[in-house]
Amino acid sequence: MAAVTLQGIEKRYDAHQALSGIDLEVADGEFVALLGPSGCGKSTLLKIIAGLDAQSAGALHIGSRALHHERPSERNIAMVFQSYALYPHMSVYENLALPLAMRDLAAWQRLPLVGRFTPGYRRRRAAIDLRVREAARMLGLEPLLDRRPAQLSGGQKQRVAVGRALIRHPDVFLLDEPLSNLDAKLRGQMREEIVAVHARTGVTTIYVTHDQIEAMTMADRVALMMDGVIQQVAPPREIYADPVNLRVAGFIGSPPINALPARLEDARLAIGTRAITLPNAVAMSGSCICGIRPEALQIADADTALVAGRITRIEFLGAEAILSLEPDLPGLPVVQMRCHPEEIDHLATGDTISLTARPETLLLFNSDGARIRFQEAHASRDQPMPAFLPLRSEVHG
Ligand SMILES: Nc1ncnc2c1ncn2[C@@H]1O[C@H](COP(=O)(O)OP(=O)(O)OP(=O)(O)O)[C@@H](O)[C@H]1O
Image 1 (cartoon, rainbow, N blue to C red):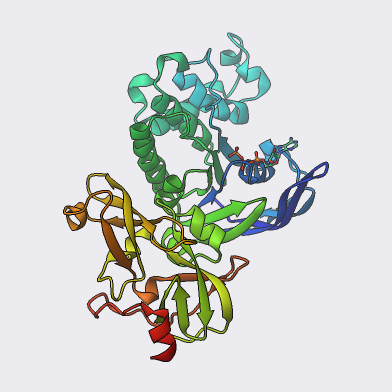
Image 2 (cartoon, rainbow, N blue to C red):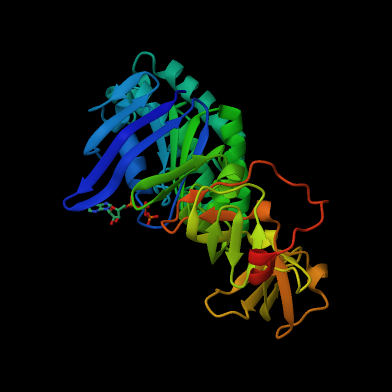
């Protein structure tokens, strides 16, 4: 096992810049998810780490080894692809044993019929057998060892692919969208299994996905990529609660963060015709974007609320509900609130209500999307909800 260090990695395909200035340190034994929309460069970066593609510039280290021209087979990295890439004519046992046979048996020992009579064959085969059975036990594949891939379900194939990748005890384990061919229920189950295998083996893992739930539930840290650039690397809770820019805030979270046009003047924040004083002064004035997570909104009195409008949709999702509100002011987008279904039991589409949020839950961004930080202390939820007041009374009051 080993840490992975990427420094200034660039990748150009002719005129197209696929990766720019990628710096990333994955600690020994850490599980990092590379998350981002389609085409952002996740797979390209993974292929560069695996040695299947070469960077145009930058350095890559595994542990203290600088990797420049090592072939994939010399890197001691294992990779699982979306397609599983199992050998269809081989049994599960043979698929699991293959990486060890290729490494531990000489070419003449792998020959059919003749190979088994060569010196050292039986000892090496016994060692391989032990490892195959150990991997099969870890992944629940023991009853399936004689089957061919065509006789397996998607989840079972996925498990064989994971087992085959880990059987050589690699330094680094790379996975490229490994669950995208599975149905939702199986994906949930395989997420847990991969996390459990990681916990048991402790192999440094880099996991590519465009699915934020996978990234957020599985990884120690999430590296969010967009347009070939890593926007932020942080533990799941932090990347959600403390995004560095509006693109990160908008990508993470479902329903997405509400982004309302606003104006700032020192500690005063105005949204539409309402304003509130923030807990701390902000070192900027002018137009900004106010980000409000759907769960930060709550129903409030019309006199003190942030926004009023008409309910356009209510979705009941079991344990929670999503309410969409069309603000009664032009220029403000539809706002979504996430809450407990009981809180909105009495409401229906077409009703008029008012919503508000605590100032310390607001995320502010400048017009370029960069985060503007203002809060130092977090107020308690038990304290009374601060009021948004009509703009004129805020200004003069
Ligand atoms: N061999 C290539 N030649 C030219 N352009 C390429 C090549 N491989 C990838 N690209 C481009 O580089 C960019 C990044 O591709 P990459 O496959 O890394 O994205 P991704 O984030 O993994 O997307 P997806 O989630 O859809 O797989 C894309 O714009 C893609 O079209």
